Image (tube, rainbow, N blue to C red; front, side, top):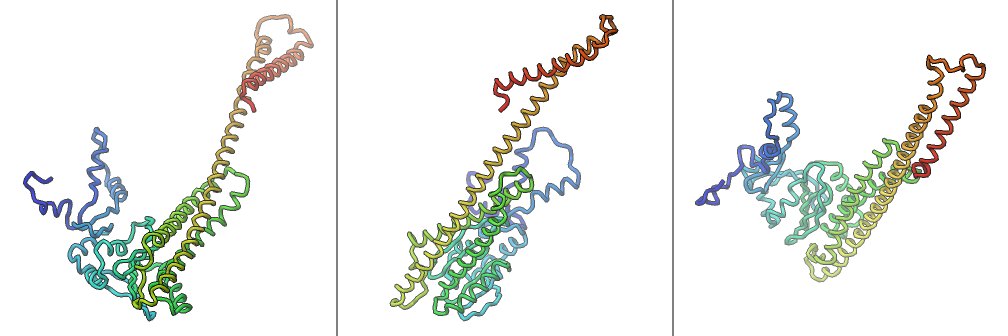
Length: 392
Protein backbone atom coordinates (compact mmCIF):
# COMPACT_ATOMS: atom_id res chain seq x y z
CA UNK A 1 0.00 0.00 0.00
CA UNK A 2 1.06 3.59 -0.61
CA UNK A 3 2.34 5.68 2.31
CA UNK A 4 1.29 9.24 3.07
CA UNK A 5 4.17 10.70 0.98
CA UNK A 6 4.17 8.11 -1.83
CA UNK A 7 4.21 9.07 -5.51
CA UNK A 8 1.82 7.77 -8.11
CA UNK A 9 4.74 6.23 -9.98
CA UNK A 10 5.48 4.01 -7.00
CA UNK A 11 2.35 2.01 -7.86
CA UNK A 12 3.23 1.50 -11.54
CA UNK A 13 4.18 -2.14 -10.95
CA UNK A 14 1.66 -3.01 -8.25
CA UNK A 15 0.66 -6.67 -8.44
CA UNK A 16 3.01 -7.33 -11.37
CA UNK A 17 5.64 -9.98 -11.92
CA UNK A 18 7.42 -11.49 -14.90
CA UNK A 19 4.11 -13.00 -16.15
CA UNK A 20 2.18 -9.72 -16.09
CA UNK A 21 -0.12 -8.08 -13.58
CA UNK A 22 -2.83 -9.92 -11.70
CA UNK A 23 -6.32 -8.51 -12.02
CA UNK A 24 -7.86 -10.20 -8.99
CA UNK A 25 -6.11 -11.71 -5.99
CA UNK A 26 -7.69 -15.17 -6.03
CA UNK A 27 -5.63 -16.36 -3.08
CA UNK A 28 -6.86 -13.46 -0.94
CA UNK A 29 -10.46 -14.17 -1.88
CA UNK A 30 -10.02 -17.82 -0.94
CA UNK A 31 -8.47 -16.81 2.37
CA UNK A 32 -11.41 -14.51 3.15
CA UNK A 33 -13.98 -17.25 2.57
CA UNK A 34 -11.97 -20.00 4.29
CA UNK A 35 -13.39 -21.29 7.61
CA UNK A 36 -11.57 -20.49 10.82
CA UNK A 37 -10.56 -24.11 11.41
CA UNK A 38 -7.27 -24.96 9.77
CA UNK A 39 -7.91 -27.62 7.11
CA UNK A 40 -5.63 -30.65 6.85
CA UNK A 41 -2.80 -30.41 4.33
CA UNK A 42 -3.96 -31.21 0.81
CA UNK A 43 -2.46 -33.97 -1.25
CA UNK A 44 -0.59 -33.17 -4.49
CA UNK A 45 -3.57 -34.42 -6.50
CA UNK A 46 -5.94 -32.07 -4.65
CA UNK A 47 -3.58 -29.15 -5.15
CA UNK A 48 -3.40 -29.90 -8.87
CA UNK A 49 -7.19 -30.06 -9.10
CA UNK A 50 -7.47 -26.70 -7.31
CA UNK A 51 -4.95 -25.13 -9.68
CA UNK A 52 -6.82 -26.48 -12.68
CA UNK A 53 -10.08 -25.12 -11.27
CA UNK A 54 -8.59 -21.65 -10.91
CA UNK A 55 -6.83 -21.69 -14.29
CA UNK A 56 -6.74 -19.90 -16.59
CA UNK A 57 -6.37 -16.58 -14.82
CA UNK A 58 -6.49 -13.33 -16.69
CA UNK A 59 -3.35 -11.22 -16.54
CA UNK A 60 -2.77 -7.76 -17.92
CA UNK A 61 0.02 -5.35 -18.67
CA UNK A 62 0.63 -2.52 -16.18
CA UNK A 63 -1.47 -0.06 -18.21
CA UNK A 64 -4.31 -2.61 -18.67
CA UNK A 65 -4.14 -2.06 -22.43
CA UNK A 66 -3.72 -5.78 -23.07
CA UNK A 67 -5.28 -8.69 -21.21
CA UNK A 68 -5.00 -12.40 -21.88
CA UNK A 69 -5.18 -15.78 -20.20
CA UNK A 70 -1.83 -16.63 -21.81
CA UNK A 71 1.06 -15.14 -19.79
CA UNK A 72 3.37 -15.46 -22.81
CA UNK A 73 1.20 -13.05 -24.81
CA UNK A 74 1.20 -10.57 -21.92
CA UNK A 75 4.99 -10.77 -21.64
CA UNK A 76 5.29 -10.20 -25.39
CA UNK A 77 3.11 -7.11 -25.15
CA UNK A 78 4.92 -5.72 -22.10
CA UNK A 79 8.31 -6.07 -23.78
CA UNK A 80 7.30 -3.91 -26.78
CA UNK A 81 3.83 -2.31 -26.58
CA UNK A 82 4.18 -0.34 -29.80
CA UNK A 83 5.90 -3.25 -31.56
CA UNK A 84 3.35 -5.84 -30.48
CA UNK A 85 2.54 -7.83 -33.61
CA UNK A 86 -0.94 -8.75 -34.73
CA UNK A 87 -1.48 -11.51 -37.25
CA UNK A 88 -4.33 -10.19 -39.36
CA UNK A 89 -5.92 -10.90 -42.73
CA UNK A 90 -5.85 -7.98 -45.14
CA UNK A 91 -8.65 -7.69 -47.69
CA UNK A 92 -7.88 -5.15 -50.42
CA UNK A 93 -10.39 -3.43 -52.67
CA UNK A 94 -9.09 -5.21 -55.78
CA UNK A 95 -9.91 -8.60 -54.25
CA UNK A 96 -6.48 -9.50 -52.89
CA UNK A 97 -6.47 -11.42 -49.63
CA UNK A 98 -3.32 -12.07 -47.67
CA UNK A 99 -2.22 -12.80 -44.13
CA UNK A 100 0.15 -10.19 -42.77
CA UNK A 101 1.86 -9.33 -39.53
CA UNK A 102 1.41 -5.72 -38.50
CA UNK A 103 2.54 -3.99 -35.36
CA UNK A 104 0.30 -2.10 -33.01
CA UNK A 105 2.11 1.14 -33.73
CA UNK A 106 1.65 0.71 -37.49
CA UNK A 107 -2.09 0.18 -37.11
CA UNK A 108 -2.46 3.26 -34.94
CA UNK A 109 -0.37 5.35 -37.31
CA UNK A 110 -2.09 4.27 -40.55
CA UNK A 111 -5.66 4.50 -39.24
CA UNK A 112 -5.28 7.43 -36.79
CA UNK A 113 -7.26 5.42 -34.26
CA UNK A 114 -6.99 5.80 -30.53
CA UNK A 115 -5.83 2.97 -28.34
CA UNK A 116 -9.31 2.30 -26.99
CA UNK A 117 -10.65 1.94 -30.54
CA UNK A 118 -7.97 -0.58 -31.43
CA UNK A 119 -8.71 -2.49 -28.22
CA UNK A 120 -12.35 -2.91 -29.22
CA UNK A 121 -11.45 -4.91 -32.32
CA UNK A 122 -7.99 -6.35 -31.61
CA UNK A 123 -8.75 -7.98 -28.25
CA UNK A 124 -10.87 -11.07 -28.69
CA UNK A 125 -13.55 -11.88 -26.16
CA UNK A 126 -13.18 -14.61 -23.60
CA UNK A 127 -14.19 -18.15 -24.63
CA UNK A 128 -17.96 -18.45 -24.49
CA UNK A 129 -18.44 -14.70 -24.09
CA UNK A 130 -21.19 -13.12 -26.17
CA UNK A 131 -19.53 -9.97 -27.51
CA UNK A 132 -21.93 -7.26 -28.61
CA UNK A 133 -22.08 -5.87 -32.17
CA UNK A 134 -20.22 -2.76 -33.22
CA UNK A 135 -20.50 -0.41 -36.19
CA UNK A 136 -18.81 2.89 -35.45
CA UNK A 137 -16.83 5.40 -37.48
CA UNK A 138 -13.57 7.04 -36.47
CA UNK A 139 -12.10 9.59 -38.88
CA UNK A 140 -13.17 7.77 -42.03
CA UNK A 141 -12.36 4.31 -40.59
CA UNK A 142 -15.08 1.84 -39.65
CA UNK A 143 -14.83 -0.41 -36.64
CA UNK A 144 -16.91 -3.50 -37.35
CA UNK A 145 -17.79 -6.28 -34.93
CA UNK A 146 -20.36 -9.00 -35.60
CA UNK A 147 -20.05 -12.30 -33.79
CA UNK A 148 -16.49 -13.56 -34.20
CA UNK A 149 -15.77 -11.05 -36.98
CA UNK A 150 -13.69 -8.10 -35.82
CA UNK A 151 -12.35 -5.75 -38.48
CA UNK A 152 -11.01 -2.27 -39.19
CA UNK A 153 -12.52 -1.16 -42.51
CA UNK A 154 -10.71 1.58 -44.43
CA UNK A 155 -11.92 3.06 -47.74
CA UNK A 156 -9.76 0.65 -49.79
CA UNK A 157 -8.88 -2.21 -47.46
CA UNK A 158 -9.94 -4.05 -44.32
CA UNK A 159 -7.96 -5.72 -41.55
CA UNK A 160 -9.56 -8.78 -40.00
CA UNK A 161 -8.39 -9.61 -36.48
CA UNK A 162 -8.60 -12.92 -34.70
CA UNK A 163 -7.70 -16.48 -35.51
CA UNK A 164 -8.80 -18.50 -38.51
CA UNK A 165 -12.33 -19.82 -38.22
CA UNK A 166 -15.04 -21.25 -40.41
CA UNK A 167 -17.27 -18.22 -39.85
CA UNK A 168 -14.57 -15.85 -41.11
CA UNK A 169 -13.87 -17.99 -44.18
CA UNK A 170 -17.58 -18.16 -44.86
CA UNK A 171 -17.82 -14.36 -44.58
CA UNK A 172 -15.02 -13.97 -47.12
CA UNK A 173 -16.91 -16.26 -49.49
CA UNK A 174 -20.04 -14.13 -49.09
CA UNK A 175 -18.05 -10.92 -49.59
CA UNK A 176 -16.38 -12.26 -52.73
CA UNK A 177 -19.71 -13.14 -54.31
CA UNK A 178 -21.38 -9.91 -53.22
CA UNK A 179 -18.49 -7.96 -54.70
CA UNK A 180 -18.83 -9.87 -57.97
CA UNK A 181 -22.59 -9.30 -58.19
CA UNK A 182 -22.49 -5.62 -57.18
CA UNK A 183 -19.12 -4.18 -58.27
CA UNK A 184 -20.44 -0.60 -58.38
CA UNK A 185 -20.93 -0.41 -54.62
CA UNK A 186 -18.29 1.13 -52.39
CA UNK A 187 -15.82 -1.15 -50.64
CA UNK A 188 -16.95 -0.24 -47.14
CA UNK A 189 -20.63 -0.61 -48.02
CA UNK A 190 -20.12 -4.05 -49.57
CA UNK A 191 -17.94 -5.17 -46.67
CA UNK A 192 -20.46 -4.14 -44.01
CA UNK A 193 -23.40 -5.55 -45.97
CA UNK A 194 -21.62 -8.87 -46.46
CA UNK A 195 -20.88 -9.05 -42.73
CA UNK A 196 -24.52 -8.30 -41.85
CA UNK A 197 -25.78 -10.82 -44.39
CA UNK A 198 -23.41 -13.60 -43.27
CA UNK A 199 -24.26 -13.05 -39.60
CA UNK A 200 -27.97 -12.93 -40.41
CA UNK A 201 -27.82 -16.25 -42.24
CA UNK A 202 -25.87 -17.79 -39.36
CA UNK A 203 -28.55 -16.79 -36.85
CA UNK A 204 -31.25 -17.98 -39.29
CA UNK A 205 -29.59 -21.39 -39.42
CA UNK A 206 -29.43 -21.63 -35.63
CA UNK A 207 -33.06 -20.59 -35.29
CA UNK A 208 -34.17 -23.15 -37.89
CA UNK A 209 -32.25 -25.91 -36.13
CA UNK A 210 -33.79 -24.97 -32.77
CA UNK A 211 -37.30 -24.83 -34.24
CA UNK A 212 -36.86 -28.19 -35.98
CA UNK A 213 -35.94 -29.93 -32.74
CA UNK A 214 -38.40 -28.16 -30.41
CA UNK A 215 -41.59 -27.82 -32.48
CA UNK A 216 -42.53 -31.56 -32.35
CA UNK A 217 -42.10 -31.57 -28.57
CA UNK A 218 -43.99 -28.30 -28.08
CA UNK A 219 -46.95 -29.39 -30.22
CA UNK A 220 -47.30 -32.76 -28.46
CA UNK A 221 -48.77 -33.15 -24.95
CA UNK A 222 -46.17 -32.56 -22.27
CA UNK A 223 -44.33 -35.80 -21.57
CA UNK A 224 -42.20 -35.84 -18.46
CA UNK A 225 -39.18 -37.63 -19.85
CA UNK A 226 -35.84 -36.40 -18.64
CA UNK A 227 -34.02 -36.49 -22.05
CA UNK A 228 -36.72 -34.39 -23.72
CA UNK A 229 -36.84 -31.89 -20.86
CA UNK A 230 -33.04 -31.58 -20.94
CA UNK A 231 -33.16 -31.09 -24.72
CA UNK A 232 -35.70 -28.29 -24.30
CA UNK A 233 -33.54 -26.67 -21.62
CA UNK A 234 -30.44 -26.72 -23.82
CA UNK A 235 -32.36 -25.39 -26.81
CA UNK A 236 -33.82 -22.63 -24.69
CA UNK A 237 -30.30 -21.49 -23.77
CA UNK A 238 -29.28 -21.43 -27.44
CA UNK A 239 -32.48 -19.61 -28.37
CA UNK A 240 -31.97 -16.99 -25.67
CA UNK A 241 -28.45 -16.35 -26.94
CA UNK A 242 -29.64 -16.11 -30.54
CA UNK A 243 -32.37 -13.71 -29.48
CA UNK A 244 -29.84 -11.60 -27.59
CA UNK A 245 -27.52 -11.41 -30.60
CA UNK A 246 -30.30 -10.52 -33.05
CA UNK A 247 -31.72 -7.90 -30.68
CA UNK A 248 -28.28 -6.38 -30.10
CA UNK A 249 -27.62 -6.04 -33.84
CA UNK A 250 -31.03 -4.49 -34.49
CA UNK A 251 -30.47 -2.04 -31.62
CA UNK A 252 -27.06 -1.05 -33.02
CA UNK A 253 -28.50 -0.53 -36.52
CA UNK A 254 -31.41 1.50 -35.14
CA UNK A 255 -29.02 3.69 -33.17
CA UNK A 256 -26.93 4.24 -36.28
CA UNK A 257 -29.98 5.26 -38.32
CA UNK A 258 -31.79 7.37 -35.74
CA UNK A 259 -29.13 9.12 -33.68
CA UNK A 260 -25.63 8.64 -35.07
CA UNK A 261 -26.48 8.93 -38.76
CA UNK A 262 -24.79 7.28 -41.72
CA UNK A 263 -22.84 10.28 -43.02
CA UNK A 264 -19.81 9.25 -40.97
CA UNK A 265 -19.82 5.85 -42.68
CA UNK A 266 -19.33 7.26 -46.16
CA UNK A 267 -16.13 6.69 -48.09
CA UNK A 268 -17.19 8.86 -51.06
CA UNK A 269 -14.89 11.78 -51.80
CA UNK A 270 -17.09 13.41 -54.47
CA UNK A 271 -19.67 15.62 -52.75
CA UNK A 272 -22.16 15.15 -55.63
CA UNK A 273 -22.39 11.44 -54.88
CA UNK A 274 -22.69 11.91 -51.13
CA UNK A 275 -26.50 12.14 -51.15
CA UNK A 276 -26.78 8.99 -53.25
CA UNK A 277 -24.35 7.19 -50.95
CA UNK A 278 -26.31 8.27 -47.88
CA UNK A 279 -29.49 6.92 -49.43
CA UNK A 280 -27.76 3.65 -50.31
CA UNK A 281 -26.40 3.21 -46.77
CA UNK A 282 -29.75 4.03 -45.19
CA UNK A 283 -31.60 1.61 -47.47
CA UNK A 284 -29.11 -1.16 -46.72
CA UNK A 285 -29.23 -0.61 -42.95
CA UNK A 286 -33.04 -0.44 -42.95
CA UNK A 287 -33.29 -3.78 -44.76
CA UNK A 288 -31.08 -5.53 -42.22
CA UNK A 289 -32.72 -3.71 -39.33
CA UNK A 290 -36.04 -5.18 -40.43
CA UNK A 291 -34.49 -8.62 -40.91
CA UNK A 292 -32.83 -8.72 -37.49
CA UNK A 293 -35.94 -7.31 -35.81
CA UNK A 294 -38.10 -10.04 -37.36
CA UNK A 295 -35.62 -12.64 -36.20
CA UNK A 296 -35.68 -11.23 -32.68
CA UNK A 297 -39.48 -11.33 -32.64
CA UNK A 298 -39.46 -14.92 -33.89
CA UNK A 299 -37.02 -15.90 -31.15
CA UNK A 300 -39.21 -14.19 -28.56
CA UNK A 301 -42.26 -16.04 -29.85
CA UNK A 302 -40.49 -19.40 -29.68
CA UNK A 303 -39.20 -18.57 -26.20
CA UNK A 304 -42.77 -17.82 -25.14
CA UNK A 305 -43.89 -21.20 -26.53
CA UNK A 306 -41.12 -22.94 -24.59
CA UNK A 307 -42.17 -21.12 -21.41
CA UNK A 308 -45.77 -22.28 -21.98
CA UNK A 309 -44.51 -25.83 -22.45
CA UNK A 310 -42.50 -25.64 -19.25
CA UNK A 311 -45.55 -24.30 -17.40
CA UNK A 312 -47.63 -27.21 -18.76
CA UNK A 313 -44.89 -29.65 -17.76
CA UNK A 314 -44.89 -28.20 -14.24
CA UNK A 315 -48.69 -28.59 -14.04
CA UNK A 316 -48.44 -32.18 -15.30
CA UNK A 317 -45.75 -32.88 -12.73
CA UNK A 318 -47.90 -31.43 -9.97
CA UNK A 319 -50.88 -33.52 -11.15
CA UNK A 320 -48.72 -36.65 -11.12
CA UNK A 321 -47.51 -35.77 -7.63
CA UNK A 322 -51.17 -35.33 -6.55
CA UNK A 323 -52.11 -38.77 -7.93
CA UNK A 324 -49.16 -40.27 -6.10
CA UNK A 325 -50.20 -38.64 -2.84
CA UNK A 326 -53.78 -39.85 -3.31
CA UNK A 327 -52.54 -43.38 -3.95
CA UNK A 328 -50.37 -43.16 -0.85
CA UNK A 329 -53.38 -41.99 1.18
CA UNK A 330 -55.42 -44.93 -0.14
CA UNK A 331 -52.68 -47.30 0.98
CA UNK A 332 -52.69 -45.75 4.45
CA UNK A 333 -56.50 -46.10 4.73
CA UNK A 334 -56.29 -49.72 3.52
CA UNK A 335 -53.56 -50.43 6.06
CA UNK A 336 -55.65 -48.98 8.91
CA UNK A 337 -58.72 -50.91 7.77
CA UNK A 338 -56.86 -54.21 7.54
CA UNK A 339 -55.26 -53.64 10.93
CA UNK A 340 -58.62 -52.94 12.56
CA UNK A 341 -60.29 -55.96 10.94
CA UNK A 342 -57.57 -58.25 12.27
CA UNK A 343 -58.96 -57.87 15.81
CA UNK A 344 -61.56 -60.61 15.20
CA UNK A 345 -59.14 -63.23 13.81
CA UNK A 346 -56.76 -62.33 16.61
CA UNK A 347 -59.44 -62.93 19.21
CA UNK A 348 -60.33 -66.30 17.70
CA UNK A 349 -56.73 -67.30 17.47
CA UNK A 350 -56.07 -66.86 21.18
CA UNK A 351 -55.49 -69.97 23.28
CA UNK A 352 -58.56 -69.23 25.41
CA UNK A 353 -61.73 -71.36 25.16
CA UNK A 354 -64.57 -69.27 23.72
CA UNK A 355 -67.10 -71.94 22.70
CA UNK A 356 -66.58 -71.46 18.95
CA UNK A 357 -63.92 -74.12 18.48
CA UNK A 358 -66.41 -76.89 17.83
CA UNK A 359 -68.73 -74.86 15.54
CA UNK A 360 -68.62 -75.72 11.81
CA UNK A 361 -69.76 -72.23 10.74
CA UNK A 362 -67.60 -70.18 13.07
CA UNK A 363 -64.62 -70.02 10.71
CA UNK A 364 -66.71 -68.98 7.69
CA UNK A 365 -68.56 -66.41 9.78
CA UNK A 366 -65.30 -65.01 11.10
CA UNK A 367 -63.85 -64.65 7.61
CA UNK A 368 -66.99 -62.94 6.27
CA UNK A 369 -67.23 -60.64 9.26
CA UNK A 370 -63.55 -59.70 8.91
CA UNK A 371 -64.04 -58.77 5.24
CA UNK A 372 -67.15 -56.77 6.06
CA UNK A 373 -65.38 -54.85 8.82
CA UNK A 374 -62.37 -54.18 6.56
CA UNK A 375 -64.48 -53.01 3.61
CA UNK A 376 -66.80 -50.88 5.69
CA UNK A 377 -63.95 -49.21 7.50
CA UNK A 378 -62.05 -48.56 4.26
CA UNK A 379 -65.09 -47.00 2.56
CA UNK A 380 -65.91 -44.92 5.62
CA UNK A 381 -62.39 -43.52 5.97
CA UNK A 382 -62.18 -42.82 2.24
CA UNK A 383 -65.52 -40.99 2.35
CA UNK A 384 -64.30 -38.88 5.26
CA UNK A 385 -61.07 -38.11 3.36
CA UNK A 386 -63.05 -37.14 0.25
CA UNK A 387 -65.28 -34.85 2.31
CA UNK A 388 -62.14 -33.14 3.60
CA UNK A 389 -60.91 -32.58 0.00
CA UNK A 390 -58.03 -35.04 0.01
CA UNK A 391 -59.38 -36.80 -3.11
CA UNK A 392 -60.25 -35.04 -6.35
